[in-house]
Image (cartoon, rainbow, N blue to C red; front, top):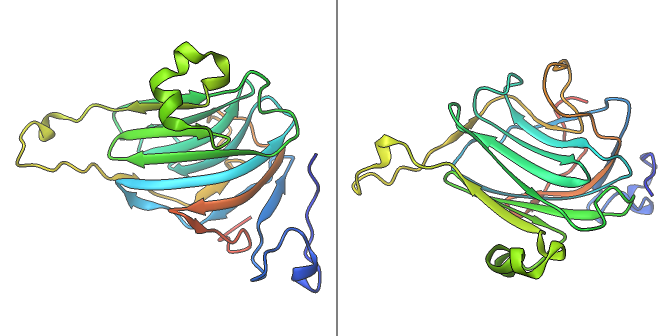
Length: 212
C-alpha cells in the first residue's frame, strides 16, 4: 500500500517527484518526522494532503508549541477517522470526520482543512461538504465526511466596531509524521505515507524541509 521513498539521479524518472523535481510524497515509520516552515500567524488558511496507512491512529501534521496549551493546530488519524484540533491558547476545539470503512485501509485518502477566524471545516475524500454539513445526520454514515467546529469570539469581539480577526500564533516548525522529543503529547507517530501537501492551494515541496 505504501513504499519507502528514494531520490533517483534523474528525479523526473521517480513517481514521487513532479515535473519540476519537487518531492510530492514521503514515507514515515519508527517515529520519523519532517519539519517544514511554520505557518506563523494566521487567521485563515487552507491545508490539503493525502495519506495512506494501515494503522488506526497516527499524527499527520502539527504546528505550535509541544505543550498543548498555547496556540496550535493538529491533524491526525484517530480510530480510523480523521481529527483536526486547534487552540487559541485558552480554548481548544476539535472536529472529526469518518467513513463507514475507515481510513486505515492502505489506500490514499484526501483531507482538507478550511480555517477562518476560529472556525474550522474538515472534509474527507472530496465529499460534498455543504450537503454533508447540512444533511449528513439524515443521510447516514456515508455522509459523515465533512464537519465543522468553532470557538466563540471573546469579549473583545462584542462591539461591531471591532472586526476581531483572531490570529493563531503558531510558533515552531510545521511537523509532519511525529513530534520529536514530545513524548508527553497525545498522538501516535504516523506509520504510513503523506503526499501532495498544499498550503493555501500552493504545493509544498517535501524536500524543502528545515529538519528531518
